[in-house]
Amino acid sequence: MLSSVDNMRSLTFLSILGIILIGCSHSTEPPLTVPVTAAAGLTDVNLLAQSYNKGLRFMSVMSNNVNLDGLSVTWQYTYYYPDTTIPPKLYWFHANSIGVAFDSTSLMGVGSAVITHTWFNSDLAMHIAEQNGGSQFRSNNPNYVIAASVGEPVVPNPTTYWNIGYYSNNDKTKFLLLRIDANTGEVKTYGSDSKQPSERNAEIHCSDAVINLCRIYFIG
Image (cartoon, rainbow, N blue to C red):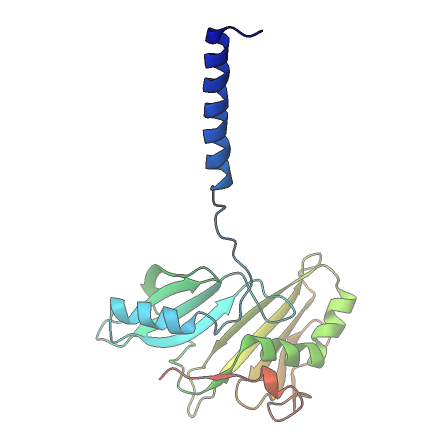
C-alpha cells in the first residue's frame, strides 16, 4: 500500500505529465508551403510593392524550379521604379503559399521592360511547353529541372513572353529553351541542344479545350 507521501508524489507526477501532454496536443507545426502558380501571389505582391513606393511598376516574375503543372514553391517578382537614377533601381519581392515578402533592391540592367500586356498563367505556359518539345526532352533527360519567367523585351511594339527552360542535371549541354507569346500561345524554340531556333504555332491556345487553364492577368 502506498504511503500518503507516495500518493502525493504520484499525483504530482501525473499532474506534470498531464500538463506536458496538454501542451503537446496544442502545439502547432509551422505552416508548410505548397506549390502555386506565378499569378497566385501577384495581387499581394503588388500591394506590398506599392507600400514601398507607389511608383513601382511590375516587370517580371520567375522561378528556377517549376513542376509540370506550372507550379513552384516560391516565385520572385521584379518591380521597376522610373526615376532619374541611371541605371534605374529594381525592387525584388517573393511569394509562396504562405505570404509575400520584400527581398532586396538592385540596379537595373538591360534587356527587360515593364509588362504592359495581359498574360496567361504559368499552368497554361507549362502545358504549351510540354506539347512543344518539353515532354520529349524529359523523356530523353529524366534528371532535369525547369525554369520559367514572364516578361517583355526592350523592343518596339513588344509583347509579353513566357520563357521556359528545360535543363539536364546530368549534362549541361542538354537543354531546351522555349519562348511562348503569353497572349496567343505562339511558340518560338530559340535554343536547343539538337535544333536550330524555329517558330511555329503552339498546339494549345486559349480558345481550345484547355480554356479552363487560360487565366489572364494584367498589371499596368
